[in-house]
Image 1: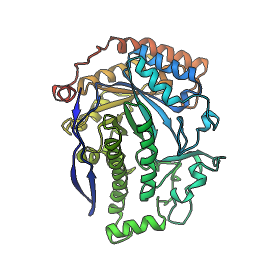
Image 2: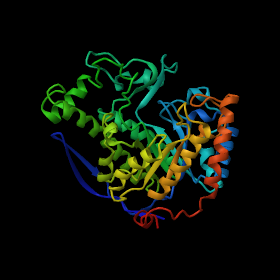
Image 3: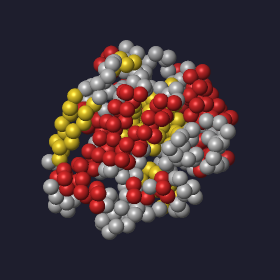
Length: 416
């Protein structure tokens, strides 16, 4: 098992003329179970009942996965007993009579698997209509959301509206929400998704000059840091927003070290650094700062060669943290058969194991029948496709050794 001492000290990061400082809290060395990962993302759309949660865990265990990334926060609502946020609308907006996170933890551990609580960080509502619950953040804390340079609040759409991590109290709130999960549940890890600015269309309308966030307080914070405005320092403005996300990651990491240091902090990140930076996600900085325990690359492509090429730059970080290539079972072009797509997935699993010893697949509903078709249609035609994928992919998963020794020696040495 990999033993990791938390790093203490002051990390100065200079980007586009903006100095950002992170103080990583010192603490006693702790044991973190970091790998090898044979993991799968399970979204909040896959379950509504206790029976469904139990079935999901059993199917994943039988398939050969050893770690579940189980989503319990999607858009400012909870799939666990939260004192901060209301029960998720997907569960009826009230206590469903069971605690999905508690049940998933208990069941996963009974089956010998790790359970990582998977949370969307920035999104705080999704949909074309506002939440009905007055206690939901969209209604309760409207000032915490994004506003553009014309004073307009980010509009509702088919996508997410998000919290503004440039405000210190917003970052504190997010850390407090996650602290409750870490403290109260027997999780092996906390997994961060949407730990960036989700500003792609329709969050930012295509073809407009809208830029988020442009409220007066945010601009004042930037002016104090840069001495000017976003218009005067456009590159510094981009970097400064990325720095606010990096500060939040460091704050979450420090909270875990104080609360339950054996819990692993991981994040889903863009596999191509330049694209991730366009959403103010500077994940290489998190590695350098010692703010993260594992990186899961959203390496979604049909091409095994492209899949390999995107992983290789991450290995230059010297395995300071485990790299876990993520792949998408459902990423199949219309001109490719189900068999071709599944065989491509098998090749990518082999490449991921060769280079890192790890992999994570997106998502449960792409290979197993689910009880919700929000992400993947659950009709008869799509069910037949999933069955065919299972016939091709599950034998490979079942054949993987319990103690995977396929990773490079540098990576394996850090897991002992």
